[in-house]
Image 1: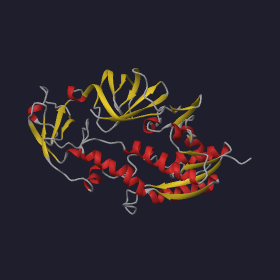
Image 2 (image 1 turned 45 degrees about the vertical axis):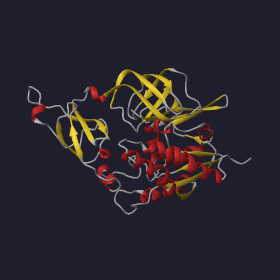
Image 3 (image 1 turned 135 degrees about the vertical axis):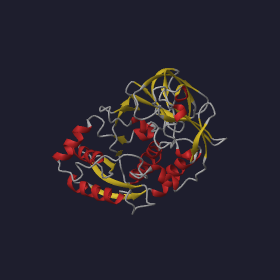
Image 4 (image 1 turned 120 degrees about the vertical axis):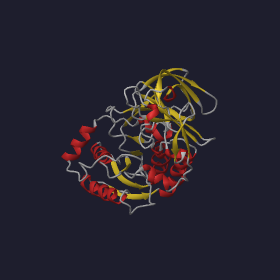
Length: 363
């Protein structure tokens, strides 16, 4: 009887490399696939795809799996990057990793893998899949410090039933240990950070290449002019660094100190950026929010009631009252006000370890 075939996305990083090894150990026929999703500036110092490909090939050799490359740059530009720019142009702050997972890794890549005769696909994400009475659940990883279910919340039943996450049950420290024991060439390679097509380059500099700067007034909630912004697209709610106003004498405290400034609101109609002083200013706190473009892993929204939610990736789950709206909308009311709830980011819902799905924050 032939072994089940798994096509695994190999990025050249340590997580997908160890995943390929674990799958082979578990008795699967493993084929590696390196996805090239961006090629606008292959030769720049910030684009690491050539080195990543070399690392992926070297690892495949050590682990003993075949590897091939597939170019999804056109799909990525069309389905992820163009949406990313549209959102920024509209003054929101999108999360391209969420879109990339839904549109590229678990759609274009999944389709390609199925054409290669795959029974399953696999990635190096830290998450788990569980089947319960014929339905598939997305669960948080055992290593909660690395859990990536937030970025996977738009997956559906058809995608989850074909997906394996070999790292779901183990800790990152164990992954590094396995890589060292196998003498993988990338065992000590740093984890990639930031958005895949931006890499380590300065973010504002990157956006400058694609978005038009439209300067405008920077005001306090009282309407006092405190500076000029370079364009609303270049700021995000809660941003503290790079606002460019520093301490202003009239806003100092009695002891001579001055609270830091934060971006609090954007008024697209008047092209005004509102800034406030102090981390806990009321304009930075939200007791409720609405979301649209809802996507539910079970195929239907959860029942109205109390759930756990995240409105940004690096955040502890918080208690919220969930209620489904019309179409793809829903609302959350938080037990405790949440800081810098940002339009364009994802609000993701949980029932314990189970990721239920989520949507894009409107306000």
